[in-house]
Amino acid sequence: MATQTSDFLVIFLVTCLGFISLCKPLLGFIRWVWVMFLRPPKNLRDHYGSWAIVTGPTDGIGKALAFQLASHGLNLLLVGRNPSKLQATADAIRERFGARVETRNVVVDLAKTSGEEISKTMEGVIKGLDIGVLVNNAGLAYEGARFFHEVDSEVVEGIIKVNTEAATWITKAVVPVMAKKKKGAIVNIESGSYGGFCSYPLYTIYAASKAYLTMFSRSIHMEYKNTGIDIQCQIPLFVATKMTKFKRSSLFIPSAETFSKASLRWIGHGEHLCVPYWPHSLQCLVLKLLPESFKDRYIFHYFSGMRKRMMQKDSRKIRPNTNQKLSNT
Image 1: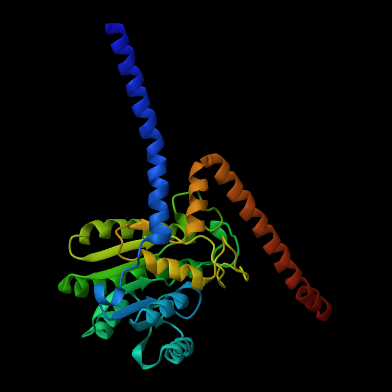
Image 2: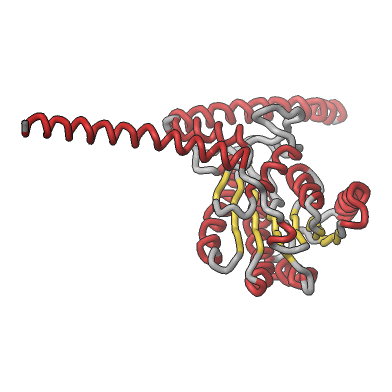
């Protein structure tokens, strides 16, 4: 009898463990469906404030996010270096949404302006405004895959200043305003080049600068989560923009508009690091399951091929000019 009882307990415990092991992925899938498709977005204007700041709003994801924020009734501070492009974006927003959305342009070259000057400029323009949302979207990358030593010094400096310093100093200007009123949302747009999935050779400086945003977001999220400020780092993979060179959108390469809609659904929901677009999250899951060595070799091989094709293309462009110079000599 005792033996039968012991066997029953063993079978019962094994069954329970098996059930728990089965429930964990099932519950994870149910939660994924909820957050990706069913969870309602927050009313950003009512929850945080009437003004939003968007850096890099003249193209790509930044421009799409500006339009999405305007569609939710937020007024916009558009931060960029090109006054004519900023004005074109502001005019397009005004044409679509009319007088119910106010826009103001902040002209500052994030690649050439010192961090302290950026912060002082932002402190001046946000004074007296009900700043609710900050989107640090502005980013720079070099064109084409390159070894670290091949990247021009000016490009290196620009990437570091725009991708890391500008986001840091703008956030430093905005946080005190949000902390004072005990509410606000800060969204840092990261990149699939650094989501912790694999190395990113031949785009090293760009990926490393985005890695900074991940740790920056994670750390200040912990510092300010009890003050009413929601800080989040969002990871897009490939999006059809000028920077990525993808001209056509698809399921796994969405348009900037499609990604921006997914982005706004996640703001303020607690996750400090997230992949807002659902097909991208599936891709991330697959990447996490693949062996590190395989991913590293594949990525390096893929970008090495890109670099080779780029150099061949550049040589074809240069060769006629070289021949012309020789013939003139």
